[in-house]
Image (cartoon, rainbow, N blue to C red):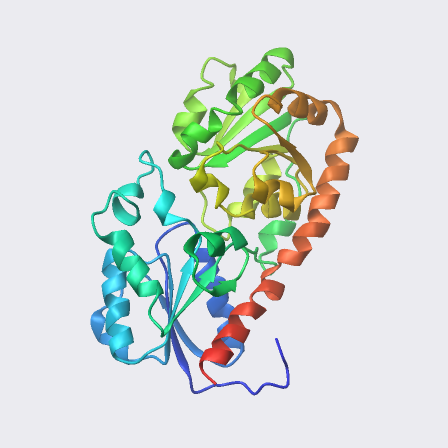
Length: 334
């Protein structure tokens, strides 16, 4: 931020969520825009009459209906920011989004492309790779974490001395998990003091039903503000991704969250993870067992990597990164 720039308390902004996991980007951006003096409303479902009520519209991951609303905003002469955190052009067929924001929808990608090329639309990206994919000039605002959320500082709960290998992912990551699954099961077979923790997807948990109760645990989904508490039950995080075009455009958000919680990770050696560079181990598909074995066997190594990841994660605090949202909006509404 630039303190010498005057605030604009009489400008109004409409922030539109996608009703998706990426909504935290819009929710936290709105917090810092309000603090900068803007009148901000953050909603998910938008009636068309609102197109004329705001000076600027910010929309995350617009679906086909939202694209139609944004077209109305543009006709009304309103500047629009479209925030993108996935490469919709490469969504795989097994992903439920394929039929809504991917090639499975007959006209979605064409409408999105037309919207993004409109001269009154500014594009923001969650990663540099997305900017390369869409080939439209924009602003990269990397994913961030809420450093005002006390749940990140809750500390470890009182629990037994088991070493928890954790996976947190939705049903869209079932095929990705296959990359790490055999190595996790081999570790469990060799060490009864290791437990697998699955969060969000019960089907992933069910792949471990043959293991005794003390070697498996399921954690349900939690609201965004409470989600950091999950890390109190993790000792090692696995972040497997198959090497696909779609996955290579994903952000490094999971590794930054591991860093905040001081939890070491083992992750697939995709560019966004190797570029993060600290806080854990990145491996090829045949390297999962050795990496997990290394972290299970060494508490000192886990602590060392966790601390390094934490120091890197401090660069992704919302209080730091959200300044980019404020600077961008100031420029558009000056």
